Structures are given as structure tokens and as C-alpha cells.
Image (cartoon, rainbow, N blue to C red):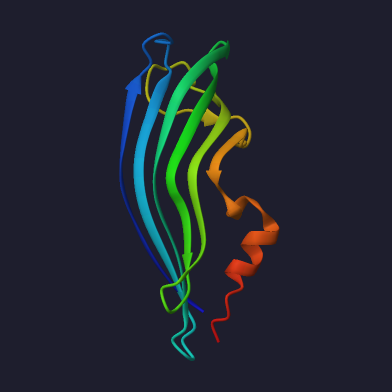
Length: 142
């Protein structure tokens, strides 16, 4: 199996207006394409997406630790087979929290304190369902 990857996007950060003590908000747009090719027969599977990721809220927990709430919106995952046919598509909004230590240095960056968790999905997100995602990824490529 061979894999080709293309990724592009833009990222900006801004300081929070109400949480001025070192809370920076991310605004990221991105596009990606992963192409998996079977070199024996040229069959492929393409995984692509384009979306916006944005921190929308930060609540101080203690000291320099904040609970950030983020949204990701767009066509986050699209799977295509060798003929270009879409076999799975995620689209909509994903809202998720993250506990983050800004380190209190008034500079962007810091340390994630745990995994980002999904709290709410709006739209169509079959990639979050194993029963839908696994068969789509198992599209025959050889």
C-alpha cells in the first residue's frame, strides 16, 4: 500500500477579550487529501476533507488552566473509491471541550491536559459510527 498526503490551510490566533490572562483562541481552516494506492493494480481509496476549526469559548478553571470549547464545521471526512464515487461523507458541526494549561506566560501555546472529547454532533457523521465507517474503509482495492 502506498500513501500520498496533501495538506493545506491557514491558522490564526487571537487573545481572548474577556479572559485576557493568556487565553488565545485558534481559528484554523484546512484541506487535506490522503490517497491510498495498491501498487499491484492501481486501485485506490481517497480520504479528503475541508473544514474550519475555531475556539469559541474559554472558561478559567484555576490559575492558567482553561476549559476551551471548540467547533469544527464543514466536510470533515469524505471517502471516495477508485471510480471517484463517495462511499462515506461526514458533514456538519462537531463541538468539543479541551482542558488546556496556557502556562500563564501570555504567549500562544501551552499544554493539553487530556484528550479532546466530542460532546455534540450536528449534521451527518457516519465516521463516528464503527458500523458505518469500517465497511466504507474496507472498499475493495485489490
